[in-house]
Image (cartoon, rainbow, N blue to C red; front, side, top):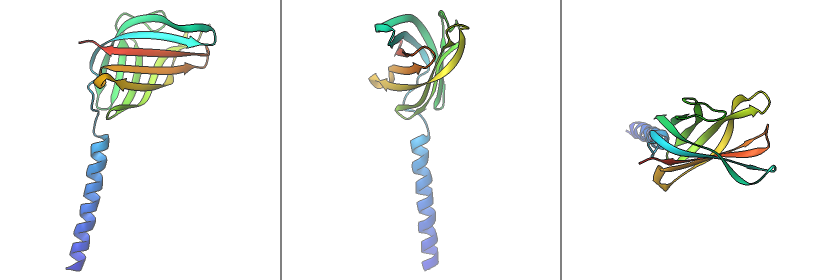
Length: 147
């Protein structure tokens, strides 16, 4: 009887641990799918103040915890229907975020840069900021969900 009790307690503990881990990673509290108004700004040593460089509408597609944002109008460097942002969510926060940008100002090659992101206003505002090493400035993408 004592062995059965120990086994039942052990199995219960394992099930509780798996259940708790499943809740914390099961999904995001936010649905990011849809169109977002985007303002892209730069700031750095060569720029006296934060400068808006482009505005666009970004369409975000989310599957599970992963999201990708595509520009609907396109801009000088990242064109129409090209990916501009991507990342991974963890419940009410962004674990990873990336901005597609010009990595070489001479050849205009594009690459992804790691960024920091925050979600506010009950999931209706996202701000992703990344330091672009090749140019020495910070690029920020601020998104506000269209209603």
